[in-house]
Length: 365
Ligand code: ADP
Image: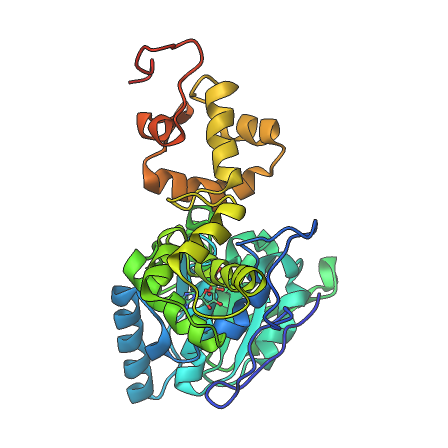
C-alpha cells in the first residue's frame, strides 16, 4: 500500500497528484488520446471554493457546513460525495480542508486491503484534519468495520493475540473528518452510509457552466479561445468537467499543429473533435459501440449488463460507471428489470434501425 502525501490545507499548492501535470495531452496505454484520463487533473483543479464552477446547491450547502465548522471551532462532520467520474468529487474533497486550513490525507478503497493499511492514516489524523477515501464503496468489509468506531467515537479497537489470549485495546483518536467519494452509492452498505452525516450527489454540469470552465482553463493554459469555441467544446463534454478540460487540451494541441498560432475558433474545435470521433452530443466511440451492440447483437434489448460487457469485451464496471450514466441522461437507453433497452431517440441519433424492421417503426416503440 502506498500512502499518499499528507499536505497542509490553506497554504499548500500541493495536490494529490499522481500525474505528470506537464500539460501533455492525456493518452491511453495505446498512445491514443483519452478524454477520461485523470493524469492532468491537478494542473487545472480549483484551489478555493469560489473557483468551483457549477453545482451551486451543493457548493452552497458545503459553504454553510464550512462556516458552521469554523464558528464552532470543531471538526467538520463526515461527508459522502457521490456521482459519476470526473464531476468534481476529489476537487471538493481537496478544497474543503484548504478552506479550513487543516491537513488532508488521501487514500482509496482498493488500496486499503486490511485494517492495518488504514491504521497509519487514522493514527496520523491530526485534530480536525480530513481523510479523503476515494472509491469508498470498494473498502473490504473488515476495513469498513474497523472504520465504524473511528467515525462514530474517534476510537479504534485493535485485537492483539489469538484465541483465548486475544485482547482488545481501545485507542483514542483525534476528532477528524472522513470525506468519502463514490461512483456507486448503491454499493455502500447501509451502516457505512448512515455514518456520513452529510451526503451530496454531484450531477452532470450545464453546458453554460462548462463553457465558463473551458474559457477559464484556456487562460490557465495560456491559450486563446473564442467564446463560441468554448461553448462548442463544452456542449460536447457530456456534462463532465474532466472531459471538458481534456477536450480543451486536445483542441489546443490540434490547433498548435494545424494552425500554428492564434485563437481557437469554432471551426478548429469542430475539426479537432471530429478527428477524435466525438459527435455533436459528445458521444464517443465507446458509446456508439454500446448502442450498436445493443441494436445489432441484442435486437435493441433487453440485454443484461454482463452480456453486453462480454460482447463488447469491456469491464461491466466501465460500462456502468462511464458509459451508461450519460446514455441514460440523453434518453438513449432504458434500464428495465429485464435489462438494457435502446430507445427510439438513440436510433434516430445514430440513424439506425432495429434488425429486420426495414422501413417499419422500431418494434420496441
Ligand atoms: P472526480 O473526483 O469526481 O472523478 P475530479 O474532482 O478529479 O473528479 O475532477 C476532474 C477535473 O475536473 C479536476 O481536475 C478539475 O480541474 C475539474 N473540475 C471538476 N469539478 C470542477 C468544478 N466544479 N469547477 C471547476 N473544475 C472542476
